[in-house]
Image (cartoon, rainbow, N blue to C red; front, side, top):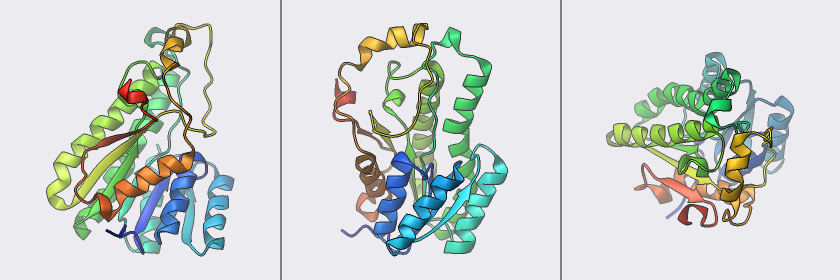
Length: 253
């Protein structure tokens, strides 16, 4: 079965680096037209240039995706430039400070939840009318190993990724009769530039330390991207509501 992605309109968030960049490039290689959304303007523009030099079609939109105005701009750009939204990849995310619950500051909690969970909600809500009008659409979210367990990150990040898992499954059930599929990947350790500003003397890092023994090898961003593109493609046409671990078996331990 072919991917069916040639000519499709795709939004990838967090596409200026890491898994998002690799995903945007993979979609472009499959013939899709890509909206590269990222907070970092230089990173987004560099990825667009890279795709265009390879013969792809892409446009950058920069801004904080937890803000409704930015979400509206991303959606409008896909519709106006590429005729609609066929695929949405909610990939942008940030880490917490690995804080245990009693140590989580309000600002840490609110920012992590806003970026990791509220932003995917806002963008999905914005694109759904266009997918529903077309009678089809694929949404792929980036969850995490932390969406399966309580021992892969701090309280805020873990809660946010459990939320992404729930959001994905709710979407899959609610909209399957309208031709919309929603799935997620759950990456294990991956070589990206996401940073962790943790207080190593706090309870969170001290408690979590022993749980990272069986994490498996560190993946390359392209390995995560391959899973995302598969889930968005026609080859996964009967896959809906799946949270796919891409973690070298960490979730099986």
